[in-house]
Amino acid sequence: MPKLMTDMYNIEMKNNIIVIKTLPYMKKVIVTILFLFVLFQLKAQTQYSEFKRIDSNLYLIWFNQFGNKSLIAEFDDYIVVVEFPQKDTVVKAIVNKVKEVFPTKPIKYVFHTHHHSHSASGFDSFLELTDAYLVTSSYNFEKIKALTKDTIKLNARYINNDSVYFLKSKRNELICYVVKQTQYLVPTNEYNLIYFPKQKVVVSGCLYQKPLDYHEVVNDRKLALNKFIVDNNIDAKYFIPTNTTKKSGFEDICTIGMLDSTLKYGIKPNEVADFFQSKSLEYLESKRDSLLKEIKKIPIYYDYYQCGRTLMERKDYDRALIIFLLIPEIYSDFSHNVYLCSGECCEFKGNREVAKVFYEKYIDCAVSESEVSFGKEKIINLEQ
Image (tube, rainbow, N blue to C red):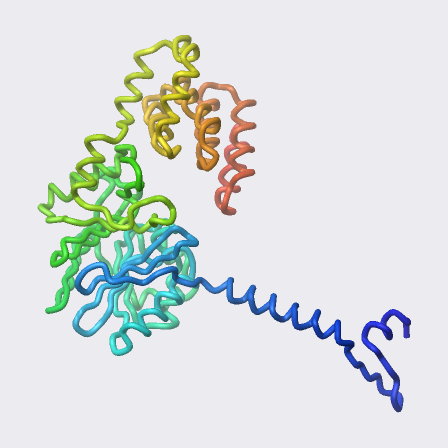
């Protein structure tokens, strides 16, 4: 047997049997490895960051590592969960906390605003750990079904809502409206807007969130939210943006007054687009330093990204590209979608070589396999 092995593990032969006596320093190494393994396992389990009552029979549970939060609603005999973002470990954390706080009340219904990952994940953990029913529209159901392994069981636990769904008890009330993209410019084909009439609380998902220190861009989804609550006479006092948290720089709970102020004072992409289109490309290039200085006044890239998108919708790819190229010079945390839009502007202008460079940058920054595949498809289409 090699001497190195016998020295390290103090190996002896007794009656033709190998006896291993671990040396003291090796015991320390083994203990350290075991400690790191346990620590890794604990980190792999999603832990909620905070749980707090926000109004009568309404609670929020924060997941700061994802920048998301879910709402827990208490009814007379059961619990309702609104939003189950990111992955199964989040759902398990929600279920465990509900059991701890409400030991006699089961989770009976689960709602979500839309099918994006900051709102919904697969439903497997709910199927495994609870007897809860998923209440959603048919469009959103198909999206969640694609993320769920036990689709047979999911079908049995699905309540279809393609219009309005009501829950009511002495303790609480809930109304779930299905907002159609054909009528209101919400970010997905169908959007579930959840309203608690007693508390005048609307779970707005990603339709409206307010940064802590300014009023964000007035995009289509904010206008859609405001129009929908007016059209349907919803007496909203508070909004719960579930895709952001105070730790990520946004208000945890917004008010109707905040929304009104945002609509009044936030940057309006159509007005910015009008300004850009009123100036020649030569003028805009000559005022590049002034534009940089103006854009820097806004702390988050998203506002001018939306302005660029508005110019793209108007098929003004030259001026949209000016904005998209300025964003990386100002913001370190801009979305890789800026590269995607830059590539599309170049592609639509017929500049395929530069478009490919931007698509490659998009792929390099992609956060999911689906985004990588999408970027590669864009390059393949360029070469056809």
